[in-house]
Length: 625
Image 1 (cartoon, rainbow, N blue to C red):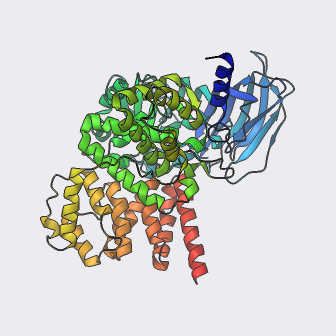
Image 2 (image 1 turned 90 degrees about the horizontal axis):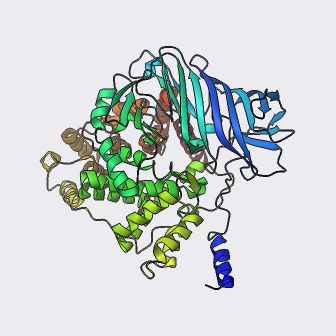
Image 3 (image 1 turned 60 degrees about the vertical axis):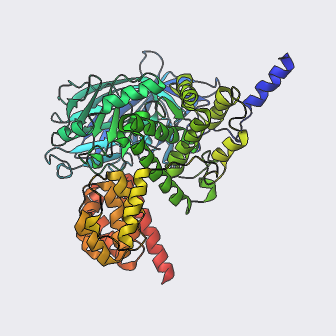
């Protein structure tokens, strides 16, 4: 190519395809284009009585702008005692700082004014008892009932509530930590946890691979370890660990399958920490130590796709991270696609297809009420928005659907090689949608022109809804469920006579989701007597059965529903029932009563979601009156 043509091609490639700087993070006060954290050293004490972490965070800095003197950090409800700075091994010297007024969503900007570009800044601080990224459980809220428990949830922007830092996924850093606890408490972090660690109340950790802030995690409680394989195992309370090891015994096989597809596992160990039921999410992909809800331990491995999902993040998300939350699909869409490939390899295509159908039905249902601007994969700049708004079915399921579209057009062999190259090329980096599009064009589209058009790709990335040309997934096993449901609804067969003996969780979920919005209460009694939905220990069924019972006036389910909402804090599982209850004056009163009892055991993230939903319902009722 002539030199002028080459320069023109490079210029065109450097222009953002989506009209803005995708790496700019509107959810952080930090200025990583001027100075960046390269490593972090924590020295913290865990105080269960005060519900507080206290100590220091020492930041190793890389100065990008020679003229920059201020260091701007993200904080939320931190009590800053002092800030010090130094170069090399010299003595720390105190430096001035200003903590700005608190923003309800983003916390307080911490500005540290430095006379020169110091290599290290140390901040002495303490967390608030109400820190949004920490949950403190009394002994009564744990499985053992004797030892308190604490754990973090840093995604999306909750790390700033327990460490002052640049709380943006565009910044990656290594870290070390010394954590002190009561002597009978075991501490763990998203780092090099030693399965043979002695429980003595003084623990040291190292994370040599650079990670973004949302993947920094801590937990402390009555925790023991049991291995699954040489590099994988389970940390849990003694009462839970054996069930978890049995349920998740395929974890090593999952690692091997993913390595065969997308390259080596690069984080040394992969352990699971089973948290109390108050954990607000199904799982959190903290590197080396995925945090897992106990609600997926149902005894038949039917919900272990959650483990496949969190493991898949070791490639998509942890290894290659979205540079800002508006490109969340680069984390969750890729991970959901890889998860399904793992499930297919281990448990067969019929199960993988059923899970695809369920997730896509959920996406299509969610799209009905979602504004068009939030239905796109490549979200626009969303200043002032809650970054957790991006954590929905669009990022997860539309993203995975798009990748399956590419897989089917190019074939698995070529697409797997492309995806592995994406992970290898961008390993331990933060990436944006512009980078992905450029990589797709050069890695697949240019090599096989005409297979996929740029218009088709942009339809997936920038248009609301799901393209009409999206590949469809059929499930013969769901066809049988459709037939059984129709037979019961049309009263051609009694519930007890339906052939359901071999049904898995996926089939029961599909059965419940296909029922009408409202079913005669007497008919729900028939279903319940045949299949015992009320009181089920399977959260996937409970989150669908209890809203149906509310809408249908099946009041017999209320006591078990109340117990479920008070026992389980996983947001995905409880929100549908609270939402259904909030639609009527009587239901809202009942939901408010339950929430008052449940709130002490909920994580702040779940509490905030329920509180906001109930507040909206009260306002709507007041307006209607």
